Image 1 (cartoon, rainbow, N blue to C red):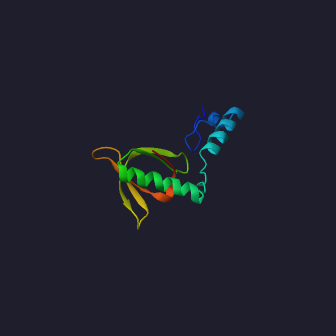
Image 2 (image 1 turned 60 degrees about the vertical axis):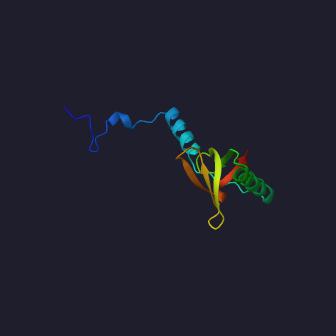
Image 3 (image 1 turned 60 degrees about the horizontal axis):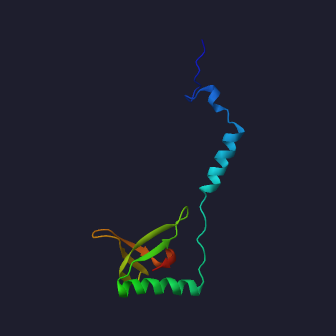
Length: 111
């Protein structure tokens, strides 16, 4: 009796790909493709910087949308520090929870 396994340990019959599975696989791969960072004009960058500065001055909570090649991330917190040399902000979300975020990676900010 012949073995059902081939040299690579896969069942011989499992190599068949149904058209529906192929379409679903290709669709999932297109969703997971990296996307480019949107280009912000001068006015949008000014609004983002104003929201960051207002959060820093008034200690108001701000919601920052940070670019990610696969899915943007919204982070809510209070700006505790602004590092002008490195162009990044320290966003505090709790007593011991904070993040340093590059200003260039922020694509939206709202108070």
